[in-house]
Length: 138
Length: 138
Length: 80
Length: 80
Image (cartoon, rainbow over the protein chains, first blue to last red):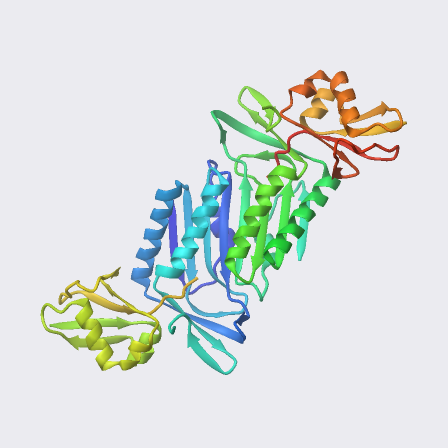
């Protein structure tokens, strides 16, 4: 089962884990990406996430399908938040359940690594004294 | 911060994630080990977990300290359940938070892999037509 | 032909808008479109990289844009 | 000396109890204790492996058991 969502609402890790729970699965690997208070030497006050939603949903689905192809995991949940996020807020939750834990870990890590490379979502860091679109400049 | 618990009560993933959440951490890797309905060809009806608690707590603490030494992660939560568990019940939750996700993933995986090798906890599978202490025989 | 172009992230700021309408010759490729954009918005050349998506899919440079395509300019992504 | 021995998992079933009291000579090593146990409970030799813990720590074969030690027999673990 693949469950993909992009939302302006607060993400719910417990709900994602509940969705991934499956009597055939012995392990659920979960990644939670949160806004931290520091990047390099700057003190971050908030982040603004922007998204090309129709394409982002398609790219996430591709990633989930590839993870199932590579590791035969049972269930993949990918929820990503957009809009204004503050320190400690959850930006993304990925939950992967599988019969065995190695597949769940490998797939979960593949999904977040690939999401960060291919899914059209952008964050702007607003820090003390300025703002910057992450990754935009060399 | 290290938080280790062995309990007969239901485990709470959301509480573990909340404990691991930290303004300095950009990623939380979580592993949830659940009772699945099948091992090899047997249909499992329930599991009974037994524990040498004083030693198990010490061994878990050693694992957490080693994970912090190896990956400099910030927070480690290890909650393990004992007693009678049914299909779909959560047996163990490991949550690791860190500034960067790679360290959180590596540490989380190390912790569950090592826990399964060294922590004195035993499970007996009760399946249709018999029961067996897991791993006891070659 | 008239093409609607979506701009995101820093490209939206460079272009001053999230949606631009461009008048292009028939047969314009993605590579040609990039040239046109970089001429109109020289700051785009300062980006680390950027991609073009056509109809929600990353597009190669030799793809030819068609009138009803949805074209999007994708600066380096930074989700998660 | 009198030693209290804790048994867990399948060892508890083999020994028929979670706690045994053994009378051992002073200077008994972990290796010797294993011999004594395997003689008393031959089924222990059918285990894939087992460890002995003394005072909550895995013990090497040459460790000498002392009267106030807490000794535990640890069959292959299967937590998680």
